[in-house]
Amino acid sequence: MVIINQFTCKQQVLLTLIHIGSSLKFVSDDLKDDREVVMTAVKQDGTALRYASVNMWFDREIVMAAVSQCGEALRYVGGNLGSDKEVVLRAVTKKGKALEYARGAMSRDKQVVMCAVSQDGRSLKYASRDLRNDREVVLRAISRSRRAIKYASIELKNNLNFESDIN
Image 1 (cartoon, rainbow, N blue to C red):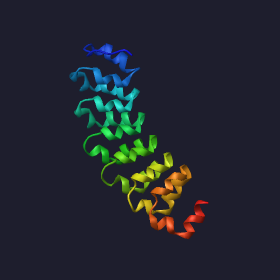
Image 2: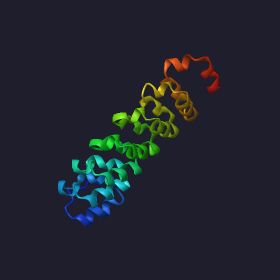
Image 3: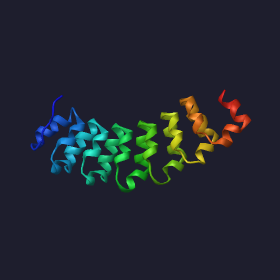
Image 4: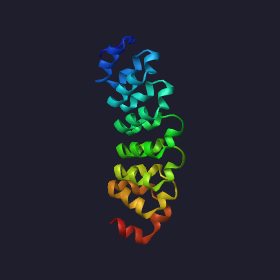
């Protein structure tokens, strides 16, 4: 395994990040705050956002690039971007379980949850109680993963008509 010392030369950093975005972890703090450097890293590995300066967590363009590459990058976004519907939709479309990191009302937004469960039925776990009781949402989740049934509301699981819908 190659250990990368603190990078100082921006061009050298960019060449490395094109191939190994997570190398952002090893660059100097001033380069972790450089938009070009961070954008290069998150386009290769969205989760490299965690190594960027906090300022970058609030940069919409950087965040959109990160969650487009890896939905789980949603866990590292700052401020209101974690409850921005466009950002969250992009993340859950890529990785349904990114719904876990959505903030605000996003777990109660049917469009967002439907996208998440369409990508991974088990992301129903992170939906609001109301949506875990929504027949359409739960059936979509179960169609992607039979295991999603364990996250459906008790009321829905006890509904005899519902049981026939999933069989």
